[in-house]
Image (cartoon, rainbow, N blue to C red; front, side, top):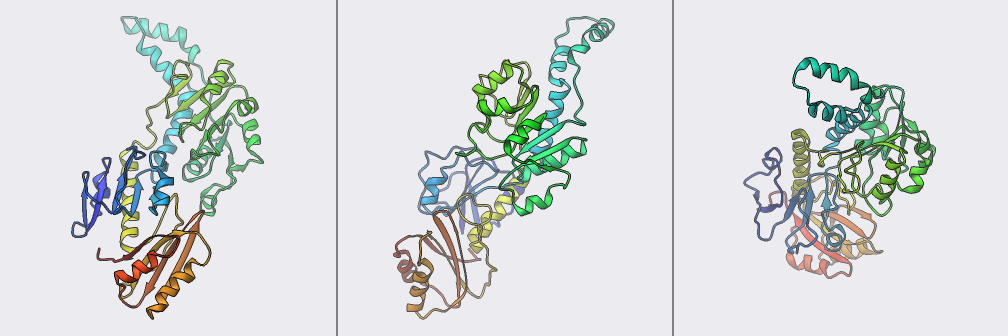
Length: 393
């Protein structure tokens, strides 16, 4: 029986995919095999030795101590792309809010003091020029980061008649296939900043992207640029952005991450982190995550881990599977194979993948494996975790 601890509410559309005969799911769980989380901050948590995997129902993992879990040999999974459509739609909405002064116009009407419709209509006709905007058609959108969300934003903007420039030096082959051929490739990051009327960022927050847009970058942008951030707080230097807003370098800023320094600017539209807040997105994330957790616990498969390589090998129920997490150092597979050879155990299938300092090995053998052999493998310098994977749980 696998034990699953839930730290945040996860929609039943996903949780019902855990078979009751194999899984126990609860919010208060002793010695869980897996932990599922959304926004709960885990940095102060103490992780029991039983924990084999942590899954985040969403893309960002800033609330999870990834480095600590990596040292413990615990993969951290996320669900990239599951909420991509929801975020894409909000980005498009954000561009429309900014270009047509919708929020300002809405506030204006709600605050009218006239007491009858005739006077209201007269007042509106007198003042409506204050809220004149501009159309998206013909404007240039620069998309920074062409992952699952960035690609969808770029393609959707083309449908609105915009010119789209994309920048992502690490774009994957699968995302490149999804990207419309009409999206132009930016010659450089600076080229995108110089050309764009709208800029939308879609990159993770890390050491390379923190304050990605700061004073130097604002200096390159067109006067009156519209900036959108539905990615992560911290990617834009808010102090420098405030200065750019004061100087009218940035016409409008639409963000999912409110900040005190920005909240009083009339053309700053801050939303309460609504990017993935749709029923469909929550269900997609939960379903995707539960499938990934089950694949790992029952088959040893790793999919969408932020700290371990994606690893898969067809499961043969007539064989015994050993899953080994170890430091990425030379001669490791040979040492493991030697332990099996000493027991005269033949390897039927083997796959080994590495990512940065960690590696993951799946080995299928034709005989049962006892705890003594697992202990021998565990004693190999650099081995962090060893388990036998059983489909039945």
